[in-house]
Image (cartoon, rainbow, N blue to C red; front, side, top):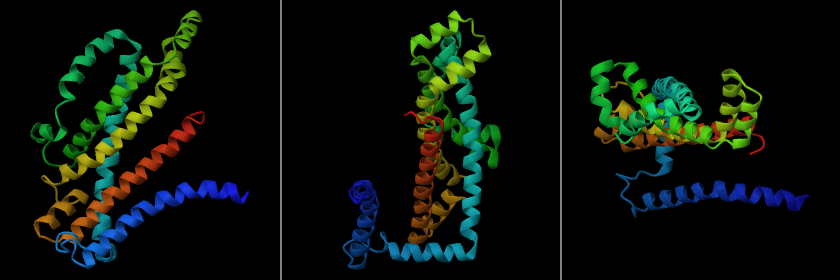
Length: 254
């Protein structure tokens, strides 16, 4: 039993130790000026600033604003992406219709489309949510369509032989069959959403984690800037764990 525990815990110890070792090296190099502490402040100083900003309450305001934008924008992008992706995978006419549109717009960076988004939706909250939605839409739609296309042919033949209606085919074959690949697209989408919100909040925003990073950079308050970067890293890791947990629940056989 002890041997089994050792086998289980060793990879976890290695996983935890690698970022800690990196932080210790950073701390050492900053404290002894191997790295310029003006540009790479010690992690202990960044942690102190994080606590101070948390005590003031401003930090939680920025976090709340960014998470609200991310969650709503993510939903606005994922829901239509799943629907269109399923239709593309199920029906060739939908695939022929949407494929060229997706192929035209997908290579364009979302931030390059930001001027058009601002013209259409203004500089308010909705434009930032739409920016996230657009960035998330493409990987989820493409992965969902690919998931349906990769469903084993035998399931399609069974549905056809038993004259399954559209509703049954959609919910009992297409959706669960595409789910593994679809979740990979959603996982990719959440990472893109975090990248997008930081850039979107640097333009025409007065709050949020991206605004926090940009304003402190311009003021050369680099410890506060690193606090924002750490928050983005933390939420990226947290959302990744959340989606992996959801995947284990929805796909226990995987």
